[in-house]
Image (cartoon, rainbow, N blue to C red; front, side):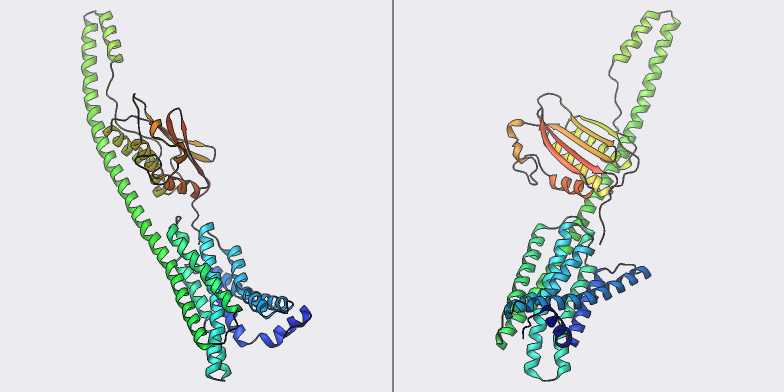
Length: 454
């Protein structure tokens, strides 16, 4: 039945279409929206927020569905009516995610894709379940329950996305993102096709319903697998960083011990030197004493093998890198001017510095005695990390400076990690070659902490 006016279709929706099944279905959808905003530990404020979200979503679903039904009726085309009306909930889900999702763009896209495809499939399953029950019995209550049950799947998906929250981690696996995106697109396409299809064949409907349920399960399992994969990788990274810090701490202790021994030797040597000068002065050999002191000052004295600045994490990492450089007989020129406390995670600071300096050590090339230059300085609201090293220009491809995997021994290993850390703190990173030196210049914003919002 089609209507000539929007108002007539609108009234018809509320008088004939809006039934118990619709109320129950939208109840589960609105409950899913509320669950997505569930925060732990649960507070009174959060409960009120969830209740308001539930009521507002419930009313919005009913109102928007009536508007879409009325607009679809104006087409006077049954296929268009099926498709347009079926898009009501996916559109509402998309708008909800756009407004309320607080996360990075890629994380938000993944969640939105899962939710939209899930609700689209759920609507198809509702239609199919109703078809099955209608063929089996004339019981109205059983028909309502059969059509409403699939919407519980959407609530379950929302519960999964809340408890298994990939926003806790910054980087996503590209392979898993591709799988989730492809499955979401496949489910949405299949749902639109099934909504437009007017087949009443039981075998076909059963087969499509089973396929929808299997694909929905695979989609959500892929999301769960993505989370576990990221969590495992994050744990490994944390262990590696912790090991690096422990190595740096042990190295610092060893360096301090060596420095104390050097200081004792230096103190003993200075005492002997002053004693000798004193004897010369007592004997009236003033000119000889003066020349002796000048010669001693011009003699290269042992330099203490230690670096120190106001930040303990940077101290540990720089001292560890200085030791690596000493083993390779490479000199590092370090200058650091930073506050004692930085708003960056230790794991990010360690990953950034070790990747930048290790790259420089690994790709160091010099026919002379060029040094690796390390500069860490505060500039207004930013911290700038600059590491440069001499390179062999004959083996460097300027177009491949930022590749995340090496070809042979080319520069670029770890650049993806460096970029991700810079992006996490609203900064940037630049890779460049100047005067036969490779320069990695990373800037982090001091006023931006890594986004951990759910």
